[in-house]
Image 1 (spheres, rainbow, N blue to C red):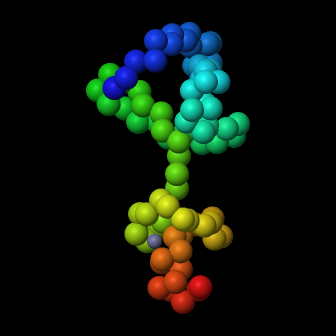
Image 2: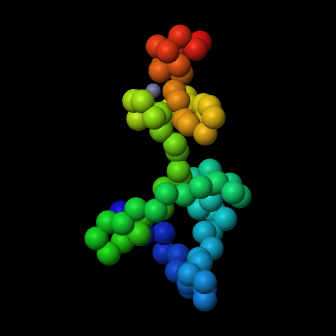
Length: 80
Ligand SMILES: [Zn+2]
């Protein structure tokens, strides 16, 4: 894991601000969702990408009635 050299304080509600340079670099915009992982004593934040409910692929997905489905599975279902 690479250190950014950035130190941020946690506020009274447990929040931290992600530096704008990091958000730009990692293409994280306002209202984007981040998934929180734990690795030993480390907390890892990753941009949340919902995966297909059928095959777990996270690329080229659409949302249909609250479920995430990829184009390949849509095609197999005959929906495309
Ligand atoms: Zn799929």
